[in-house]
Length: 192
Image (cartoon, rainbow, N blue to C red; front, top):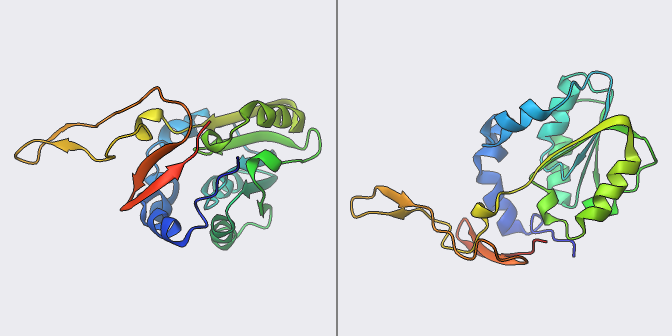
């Protein structure tokens, strides 16, 4: 099932306030580790699955990518990505990850940051990526750690003096859809 919470006005408004949305890659907690995994983009054709605001597309272009294609299920995300990039070799398209269908060997690098955990049939996506990658191409991805989506209050538990005691984790090993708070909104997020 394809999920798209990002085109919901309230959800998108809350997401737009996140540090990663405002500051870009340097505001994303996982960026500095993710960056270490990325190959040299010089002269490479790059696909970003779940490109969101397009920060990784811009990074690839800044680092010499020949052509960068970003795809995302959200019209709102794609609009921001198109507005943010000034590179003529970057194209952002509204395509759900599950529906990608680019020709065989059309990319040298496929990246995806914090998006593949939304995909129900990940093996199908991996098969498509395999076909789209050139010989020796690379897939680099990250997914949301389940500690952040495990059912719970999504707030730190604090002591009497306001000191942080621990992060609540309930039903950590529960597979499937989850309810959790995003800002002040309770959301039903489906995960594989």
